[in-house]
Amino acid sequence: MVTSLRHWPVLLATLSLALAAAGSLAIAERSVDDARRADWAAGLGFGWTMVSAAIVAALLLRQAARARREGEERLQAALASQAFHDPLSGLPNRASFMESLERALQRADRQGNRVAVLFLDLDNFKVVNDSLGHQAGDRLLVAVAERLRAVSRPEDTIARVGGDEFTVLLEEVADGRTAIHAAERILQQVRLPYTLDRDEVFTTASIGIAISAPGRDRPEGLLHSADLAMYQAKANGKDRFEVFDLSMRARAMERMALETDLRHAVDGDGFSLCYQPIVTLESGRIGEVEALLRWEHPRRGSVSPAEFIPLAEETGLILPIGRWVLEEACRQARVWQRRYPSYPPLVVGVNLSARQFWRGCAEDVARALHTTGLEPASLKLEITESAMMRDVESTIRTLRRLSDLGVRVAIDDFGTGYSSLAYLKRFPLDTLKIDRSFVEKLGTDPADGAIVQTIITLAKTLNLLVTAEGIETREQLTHLRALGCDRGQGYHFARPLPSEAMGELLARQERLSPSVVGPDRLPIPLGSSRGR
Image (cartoon, rainbow, N blue to C red; front, top):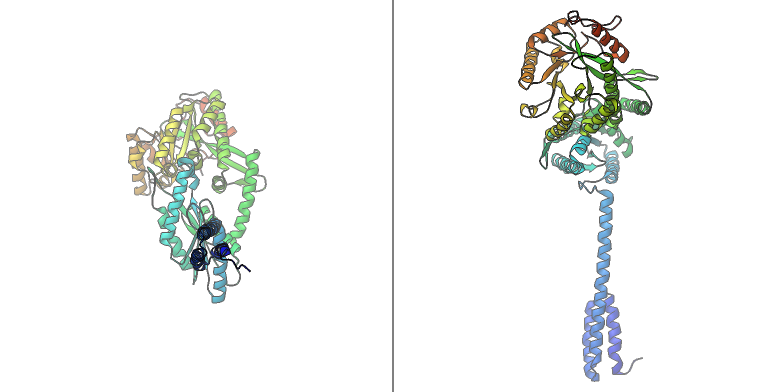
């Protein structure tokens, strides 16, 4: 036991330190007063100083411990937020969405309700990344996330689950109409223009809808069903929604097998080119040929381009395929030019996909010309109107690079997109190709005749050539010649031909004098498929 007053300050200092460290600040402060009185009674001067220093040290330790604890809590909260939220858009991520979906399904089972999952994927998002850069792509994703918030109900769960993929969870869904109305609102909002710095960008979305069945769906299965429906929406033309049904699973398996075979075809020699002649309508002579890709599947036989080209676009395989088409078409055209010389030299047309166009096709074109020795003016690149109008300023930059190379450019399927005349005159173009849908009813539908006449007049005003696609009858040919169309192609002249047959056609033309060949007397070789 301490009996001397001299020891009281030390004892009180120790006690104050312990109390302050333990958080008993009020008791520690009373200990200070006790120490002050003990110092006074003992006539000593060091007790109060010791107690004060001890308390200050204890309080600093306490504050440091509290700050460390709060910092750890903030760190844990930040890590938890990162684990369950997308850092770019601030939306919940896939892990968070799956937890919300699981809880929603459990509630729906208890209450006898249903839930719906909307799986949204932006159409052609890679075009934005490839043409404007990834920062612009990120800004577009943030803008889409904001629009999804704006058109959704407060109780809906919105998440970003992948690069350009979003999901929406709808609870208490009585039937499919609620989900369909939500999808329609989203599609309408996504279609509106976006301003990214100085560029105005348009995009669309494809949405898949899956609705739960009470007691039978798990989160992973429901999300997968919505994903399959989204792919079906893309296959059906994009900018739309589809509701999942069981047949989609079978189609998904077929698509997976087709993609595998397509990759093997890219690595091997599964592709070939056919060529369709493009005829000068005034003389009937072949001045151009259009190269068309064909795929002969080892088991399925000939696969329609309408089936495998969209798959190649989606998977990115269109890029190596497109490079092969460019080089092979240029090589073949150079062979024909040497074998069947003409003036002007034969021109070969090659279709560029939207993805090729936006990925810097000028380098691929320059490489193909250099490798094959084809003159740039003998190559005409065909690009659809819709692809060109997706981002006008980037289109102009790309077209100027192609123009600098000396190649020609045609707008394919003209009249089906939404070209602005103000923009059209800025494009360095050579040809407008009238879409076959307008040619089909020439002579029977006055409106189509007026449209074709307007396109031809516009082209002449802009000093462009005009090629009509899909000429199948003599009547169509007669109308086009009367309207002043320059060139045409279609089954009336010839179907797409293998390179050997196309070579025979060119050889026959070379042997005939100009007086023998005419608009209705194309030198079709025996055995070719003229007409339908």
